[in-house]
Length: 242
Image (cartoon, rainbow, N blue to C red):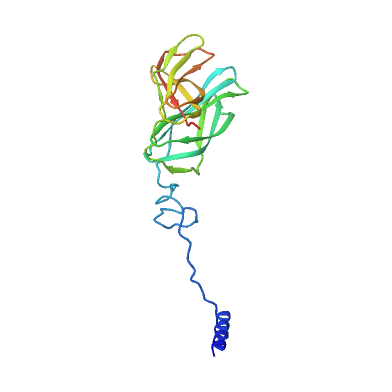
């Protein structure tokens, strides 16, 4: 009886295997579903990614080309991110230069990180053109922006007061300091020189290869042409460091 019962149990197990309950995978921020209090598919709620409808739009305050030599221009787009908690990572942009007849001369494409609650320049330099009469510029951010929640982003670099040496070939210098305990590499700085009425009249960019912990360095910006108007405010911006 024991053997027969054992055989019968084996037959039952073979013919009617134990069915294990199917356990649904835990929801994540990468499952292509709107769940776990997300406001959209895999965005907001517990997810780092922000839904496109949440942030206020980044505003372009002004865009201007600056002549640095014959058929060579720098250009700056001045943008502001009004969101206190939302940053944009690796945002694609297009900068176009036009002549005085509104004909496209050339364009540049690039990518930029925009921190929360910041007003900053987006700089394109050394733009060689086929015409010397570039008169206006147009700037556009891409539509599909990678918004991320980054509240409380700390300032990494302090910038001292700019020093101007005006003349036929102007120069602006300043002392900068890494205020963190990490080494910052390839740190770009952009300067915008305004006239006395607050209109931008020149811009330039320089890069510091490395800034150690609490280290200071001097940055210098130069121009080949004199400023056309009396100089007003000078603003220097440290941009994203690697």
